[in-house]
Image 1 (cartoon, helix red, strand yellow):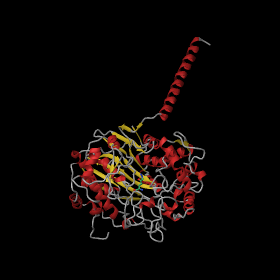
Image 2 (cartoon, rainbow, N blue to C red; image 1 turned 135 degrees about the vertical axis):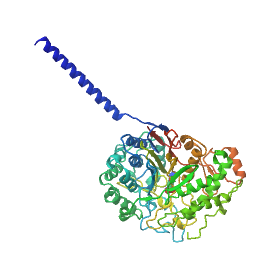
Image 3 (cartoon, helix red, strand yellow; image 1 turned 135 degrees about the horizontal axis):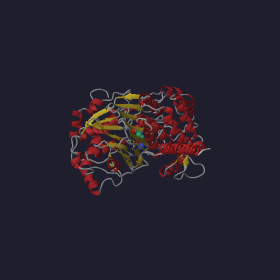
Image 4 (cartoon, rainbow, N blue to C red; image 1 turned 60 degrees about the horizontal axis):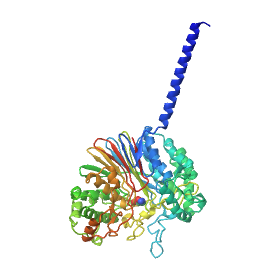
Amino acid sequence: MNLKLLQQLAEKRIYLRVISLFLVVAYISSCAKIGRKDYQEGKTVHGDKAMVVSAHPEATRVGVEVLEQGGNAIDAMVAVHFALAVVYPAAGNLGGGGFMMYRQPDGEVVSLDFREKAPMAAYEEMYQDENGDIIDGLSLAGPMASGVPGSVDGMLTAHARYGTMPLKKLLQPAYKLARSGFPVTAKQANNYNRYRNTFIEHNRDSTVIPLVKLDGKWEEGDLLVQKDLAATIKRIQDEGRDGFYKGKTAALLVAEMKAGNGIIELEDMAKYEAKWREPVTGKYRGATVYSMGPPSSGGIALMQLLKMSEHFPIGELGFHTPETIHLMTEMERRVYADRAKHLGDADFWDVPQEELLDDEYISKRVRQIDPNKATDSEKVLAMQLNHKESEETTHYSIVDANGHAVSVTTTINSGYGSKVFVSGAGFLMNNEMDDFSSKPGVPNVYGLLGGKANAIQPEKRMLSAMTPTIVEKDGKLKMVVGTPGGSTIITSVYQVVLNVLDHQMNMTDAVTAGRVHHQWKPNFIFPERDALDPFTKKALEKMGHQIKERGSIGRVDAILVGIDGKLEGAGDPRGDDWAAGY
Ligand code: DON
């Protein structure tokens, strides 16, 4: 072999080495990219493009990763919703319902109602005994408390119209979290331990309740594995809507209901349909607010509050001053009185939406307010018409890189709903029937009153307070906001909107700030403990208000778009709520 040939071979080898080294480096860096986290996460997160805020870090990560893969806000919503059903069973759900507000970059806003509905066999007095007295707890726990669930149809309906990624792929993270498990947070561990006996009391077989640990207590970091739930999610992945509303899942659900006098039938399941609704819209301080119409009371009540607030210089009067709290209380007193009388499912009841939001009516309500004196709630009447008349829910907010925004509040009503797991299907059923007015004058679990407008009827949707909201300013997205909290939902969203638009707070401060609630009856101002200083409380008492401090109110998960277009995501410090964005 001559020298030249040897040289050529050596060069070739060097070339080959260089090429393979290059290929190895490229491979390693592409692997690193796949596993790399390109987003920030925390209680408060700032981002240039996209953001997800939900009640649980695992669900938030699932959502932001869908956005990173090029999914839009609706894709992320579907992934987050199913993930929450796994990692946040107190309120995340397949067995419940909710409402979605969706804003597209061109400014079009739509809303979807996937609220539960009364089964076909439901009737007005179903929670009363032969004397007409309410049977304690019947609308709150056990199979009779459940309405026909709407969440799965809601997610699939929104996805069919606006989604871009395959459903199967979007449900895969939830499937994996259920099948392989996820580490529970400290709050969850405590909660599951606290509910242990309640779960055992309300379920047929305590050995199959995923949240009951038979061999001891839950500790932070323990893995929660939910194999039956994984199988249910897989059926939805494989069969779509029919994987839940028909076939095995529906059969398991109906069997569970029948085992305890429940009245949901296969036909109820097959017939359930989410409905597109007209959003409730109004102006406030130059911004446009979009929120949920009936069967939620949230949009109408929020808009009444905002319209009344425009009559007062709330910003100048100051945050949590006696004057501001007094005025807010007086407005709330009137709005909740109207709610009790006039609001219900508009498919069954003639809701006087226009009249309730009419400028003259709002001004009349404002004129009734004495700036120095509390009104007796007994003397506050609802609008007179000339014609006939634990707290666990969860909210998530999403903005994608193209400016689509989603605001969803979803619930199984109180914590862990009816407490009944569908055996073999692994999910909890709602106790949403309690949101109907079981009897005029008898308050529901949140102390809310109602009458004919919200009486039980077959296939009617129970009135809700959920208030998923989107705010825009100068034609651009400004805020995505919502919260759980039963009757306090409306006033919490109201306060966050005022905190930003009147008190000029950033999103984190607006979400963190103490909250105060009034709902007409009972006639108390309910501030979170320490939300009001002693001077303010004294001044309010002098005006004739009664004050009852209480534990935390709501868990607001919200996104604010700054004037520079940057996003601020804020997860409420009151819970495990978590933001992630980039
Ligand atoms: O729809 C409603 O208004 C109630 N079922 C919401 C319940 C709720 O927010 C409980 N959570 N804190």
